Image (cartoon, rainbow, N blue to C red; front, top):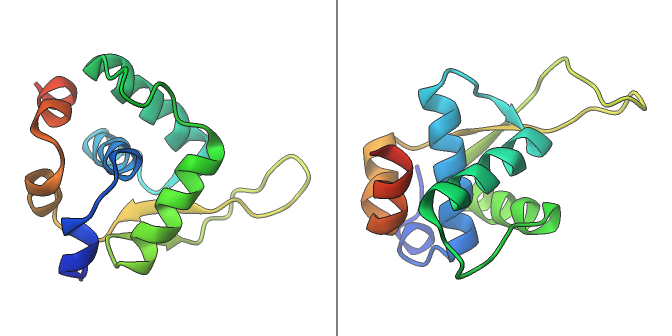
Length: 115
């Protein structure tokens, strides 16, 4: 369960990461690895035409995921997939109900991505 303080103080990158996770969930692609999540987040930004933050780099996505995981909003899931170098790649899914997340994400972003 997410802490209220985490959901009440989401940064714009965190909101975009959550939207990326929700679209992955909607499309049956969770758990999703971080490199795929970043591409999905970029598509969310394109759909929203959000020039406010430009684009998200991998560090932005990872920082957002770590904070959201600490707050109980997302969960890291173990997968059998590995990187080309044989290392494990983290994969994430949402821990909260989609409706609760959508209530705290910027309405313009949600509308652009889910309408």
